[in-house]
View 1: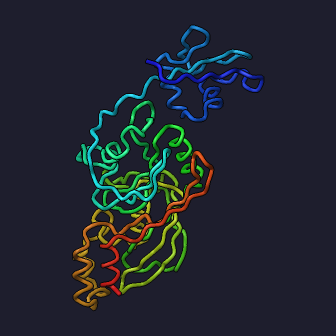
View 2: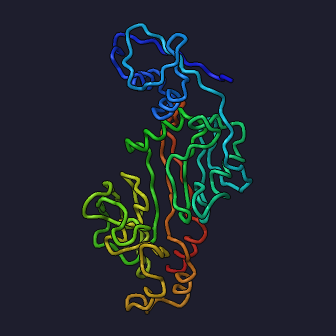
View 3: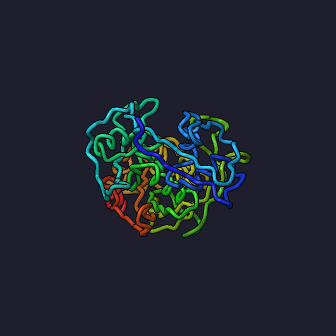
Amino acid sequence: MISTTHTALVEPDDISLRLDKFLARKLPELSRSRLQALLEEGRVFRGNSAVTDANTKVKLRERYEVRIPEIVVSHMEPQAIDLDIVHEDKDLLVINKPAGLTVHPGAGNPDMTLVNALLAHCGESLSGIGGVARPGIVHRLDKDTTGLLVAAKHDAAHLHLSAQLADRSLKRTYHALVWGAPKLKSGTITGNIGRSFSNRQKMAVVPKGGKPAVTHYKILKQLGGVSLVECNLETGRTHQIRVHFAHIGHPLVGDQTYGQSTESRLKAGTYKSLPKSAKEALLGFSRQALHAKELGLIHPATGKAMHFKCDLPRDMKKLIEALS
């Protein structure tokens, strides 16, 4: 059953474009990957004939129809999970994600994820990403990282927000607690990030290969051997803040993957003089101390600049109080 048909006419400026590039130009609400999938499925027509080759060169005055089928139901199960919704409209949602909530289903986390929760919360308001009734996660947060995350409700919003992420107009500000204090009160950490050569389960700053990564930071407060830092990302690599601060010798508090255990840290001379209450608070903090505090974006439908903030979670606030 066909739910939507888009028509695109080849004009002089379009002559000799590849068909997929032509359609992407004429139908910006559909991503290139979505259009390529529709071509492969035989849903793009020139006259009464389906065209399946994305490399086809278009000719003047040709008219193409893109027949989009009804959105199919996601194979993922909607699951009622309480969510802290900061903003919601017909195009997108902004969520304050708690620690412990995985964003996408995957190995070890087949369900009870943010995607499952959004499927239940949004219901029929999802018009689908890539032809499937599911939310489009624009950027991810690690399972134990808290804070602001944006999700799209349909292809056009997802494409628009993903473009903002790519051109760095989607702004993200994080607060983190790191061991020690970087030499400079503010600075920039650079270094390509890729799979660690010694442990393929981890990311690392690698001497060759990987992807460029840039993290800007400033120290907000020093707290007895621990620093509260603010970070702004130019790039969004996997575990970027965690890897970059570990690389300069100041891993995040509670990060068991990229830093020493808290027990080992507290045995060092720098921390022996900490009050018992501060040591207990550090030992009791069992996740990486990282929070996505601010998010800035351009609304995909209205073009309006939007800015969101959320407070530090309770566990990070309590830790800061204990260290103060």
